[in-house]
Amino acid sequence: MAHSTSHDLVQRIVVTVSFVVCVIGSMIGVGVFGGTSVNAAAGGALDTDATLLAPASAAFSVWTVVYVGLAGYTVLQWFHAPTPAAQERQRRLRLPVAGTMLLNAAWILVVQAGWLWVSVLVIAALLTLLIRVFLILLRSRAAGALDRVLVDGVLGVYLGWVCVATAANIAAALTSAGFDGAGLAPDWWAVGVLAVVGVIGVALAVRGGGPVAVALAIAWGLAWIAVERWDGAPYSAPTAAAALAAAVAVVGATAVVRVRAAARLSSRG
Figure 1 (spheres, rainbow, N blue to C red):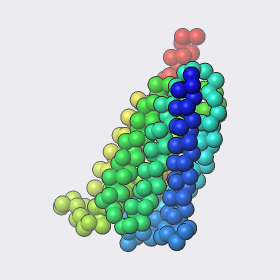
Figure 2: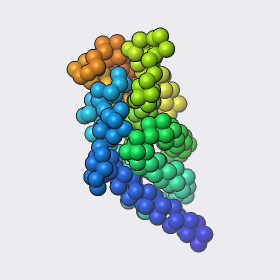
Figure 3: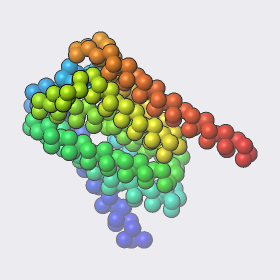
């Protein structure tokens, strides 16, 4: 018991320190502490008009939800979980979640340095770790409403948004490197990438039993890509249409999975 308590304390401290680092990184990313905002960093490669897959600036308000949610998670994980299963869930989640927060800060610092291809590697690692977190959540159950919101909900939004952000980050790196589409028009490259994002979102819906937070975050990012391609520059009707179609597919698949699950439960009752 003493060993377990000591191990939990170390994990809790790691999560807390990682959250502080994450917040400092986010402040640098918005230009505090003398840093350059993410949109202006790396020669503007990640700005809203840099690629066809860049969402409108309003999309990034989702980070407020993520950071506030991570603050709640950081506080929550200091409290003793009510059951052995919930305690084990906490232990399995803490270090991977801490890792995502450190990678988040690392991504901002790398972008500040203008290392776009390194930023692709960092965000790919972040996405991979969030998928691991997602799988841990699937294999365990929330210990009440607060756990569902501050753990499953927050980490679901985090994962969904990073799915979209990864596509935008790769597009920015390719465009900055002078990729010309290899004979295929930029619009159709964008449509293809958005189709992949949609497939990933549908797969997460099916595999995860219809996680609402993940679906809403993916749809949020895709919808703001559509808005920017309709009203911003560069204009691209095919990209906007594909982004909206992918968002509808992800939300629709999530709804269908949840309705079917509810029907199965009802029939058993």
